[in-house]
Image 1 (cartoon, rainbow, N blue to C red):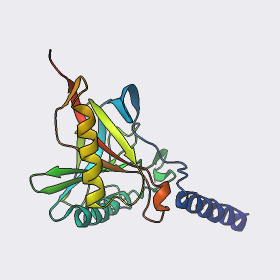
Image 2: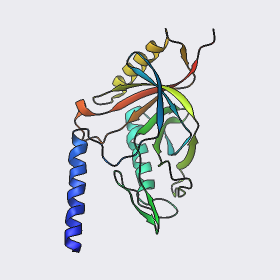
Image 3: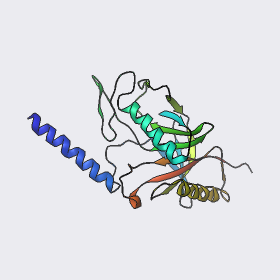
Length: 210
């Protein structure tokens, strides 16, 4: 019986990995939001407050993303006060009677120290375990309205910059103005086929005054 369970678990893991190659996301929670409008190809979304694990990393955007991902992966795979191991795509036991799962996307935002890299935590996790790495902290991301533009492909620094400029250009004739720095969200692992990857650039916005 145990061998059967192990075989089914392995099969499930292989299916999840195979699906992620072609951009099919299974078992990964996303922060809840409401689409409140559109500006051409961009969406206006309203997000409620949410918790995230965050680390600040200097360097280029792509190098900082890799280093930040490693630090945050250390946190979700046991580098925390409870020793919890948090699965990337499916819940695993954290403690008796408690289950926890990681969400998508991974977030990257310019910061004074370089780049802020974030993993959003599950909506039902109100008291996450404390990180053991002093470079990782738990933050509350406030409620906000953001304009979001989705794109596929490899999210190089040049590609992200081009999509950010496109989004900001869309806002110019609209009734919305940027109210903070842009952020980039990455939904897929690096082995996903580039044309099928989901990437997004987003910027917080407020309505323009007459």
